[in-house]
Length: 158
Image (cartoon, rainbow, N blue to C red; front, side, top):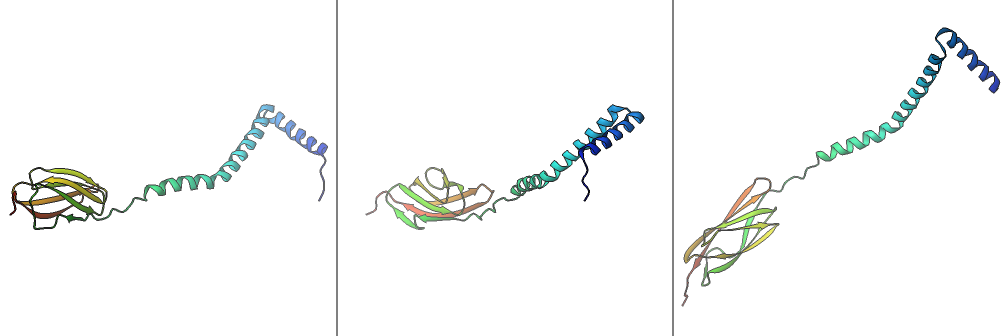
């Protein structure tokens, strides 16, 4: 391979510059050189950064579609047993849900609203006589489930 001296490169550059100067002017020559250098620099930067930009945006958009699948809401009452006879007016109602839910207890002396994160319990006041208690759960996904239990409240059992 033939080595080119720096003097011959300077001579070729000066000759090219003088041709441009005669035809278009000296400013146009340097504007063209600067434009080519800037264009090549920008294309190299874009080429190197392109994979990083793609992975950044694809990772952002992929996370949008990763929504959790909601569980089906199921409600069960573990306490009191259905058909219980109580001589006290206050009982504790305990139950479970498969997903977080708002719980509404009705059918006794007062209605009660509570929250469940898998389990719930609430003190409940019974009315005298037969109490058909209804427990309704409402999940954040709009699902509902209902369970019922019957409790007899008798003031004096003898």
